[in-house]
Length: 167
Image 1 (cartoon, one colour):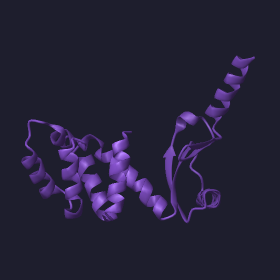
Image 2 (image 1 turned 90 degrees about the horizontal axis):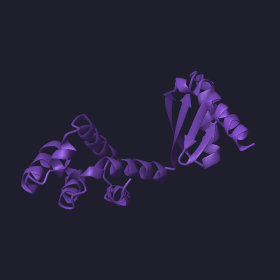
Image 3 (image 1 turned 180 degrees about the horizontal axis):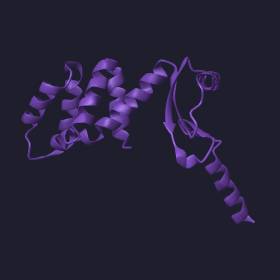
């Protein structure tokens, strides 16, 4: 990820752009994947690009997007939005965790995972992204930022293989 995406993420946060405008903009960009290429195309005038922004995007984010066009940084707009999401979550004392599993945990297990994460990261709320992953063979992998807890069968097999190779 380019550093400029972090800067734009901070700008979006400092401009206090609403979550609904950010989400709507993200949805527009994802559903119209060619749009970023259009904004990056030097053959299309800045005026035409600005007209598209004014037609499609919420008013409060338009100036930021226009600045990204002028600076030729629209290729990192989705990364900037991801940065905004992470910074906004942290601002609200929350965290995002990714839980990969073979067998989906019960609701009570999910509650215990969230409580563990709240305590461990001193967070007020936890967004737990659940991803089914049969390649793990068994167990789970829990990831929060750069920390990974790998309790999968696949991970255990990998560790055994590495230990054997070291000998």
